[in-house]
Image (cartoon, rainbow, N blue to C red; front, top):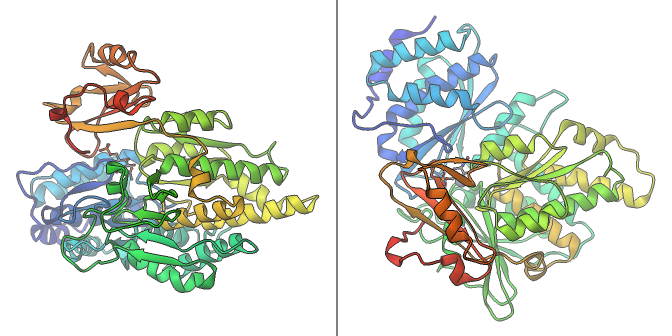
Length: 531
Ligand code: 16G
Ligand code: ZN
């Protein structure tokens, strides 16, 4: 039965602020960290219930607000294979978080136990971690209160990145099975990725040192740890690695800053020809860039990573003699630059889905190999169990096939298939560049981005904006899409869409066209807010 008294008593220590309506959205719960104590307590209870529902499989809880400003914080649940929480439970999470008081909370929990048919006699196991935010320790304490109220077994993964937490969930749940994904420790993660990366670099000229902007976040800790695992094979130099100065996190640095402003963080100067990358606050996103010979900045975003990585995997699969059996596909969102879609569509199947990792991840699972990166730099590559099996068991008939198979195996191991992982992505990118003898310039020249503009607009009610066709067309408010079509038709190569944000109370407007002034259109500058 439900430990009602324990839940009630502990819940009283974490009262819900009466004026806030919480919502489990695409990024979990996310808002000002100082308001989240009740949410964390309740997520502790929810995570325990989710684990019981799944027969005691370990569930992950990550406390982070990613690229948001430092005072924000958030929490999201990770399902047993390391993937996002199943959508139907998002509503349960929202319901529990908004119960006005402890009695109502216990009633909501009781209700969930009944509707989701949860067997309370099953064990509950949870692993949690947090990023470097100052509100983290207090929120983790609230989370632990929730776990203890439910008598859950828990493991504290400490201060670590979102992708490491996802990795831990997957490795714990597959330990000792044929689907084993590695050692279920941070060392296991560091070893698995760095070994595969070193094997991919073996025999190639050592790449130039990579400058990594760590957004003054938890990625700095992980990147620092990788240094000794990589040894002489690959040098990383860290900048914005200060996790102690208040206010520094994500401030004028990091992947989101670079992507949104399309410029270098002011803390970075690049030598002509130098390549660098920026992580976000929990190290699940990455944006690359380089300076050309004139010192001019060029961004290499998630779309460019897709083009580089997908083409490389297609070549390896072909060289391995597996192109009949293994089909590689790409998933994008409406934000993908039109030039990238054109480049990729000429080479392999490309699908467009609504914004948000769960949509991309789910669509990627439909291919033997599914490559997805959001333009903002969050992404990974998924290999189906059948593709894994073929790659590890196929008998090569030529030395070329044999090399390609070994490389594919290492590509699989260097990738964190559970979620976007900035450092894993960097190693993958560097491996491909080394294999193709590309510098930033050659990589960039795979296609030229169409100039584009992304703005946010505050509206009375963002829920009045409904979209279809993977958010590329508005169905309401009535008449608006026709207006957009009319405007877009005036510009060469014009494309534009409007979608309500899933994380902020605004709508986002994206536009691209062949020339910069046309992408900017005739929007009065007073209407433009930064994104
Ligand atoms: C969340 C999503 C991200 C998406 C962004 C869009 C996850 C883990 N994260 O951060 O993929 O790009 O939301 O935000 O799904 P928006 O709806 O406010 O534009
Ligand atoms: Zn993030």
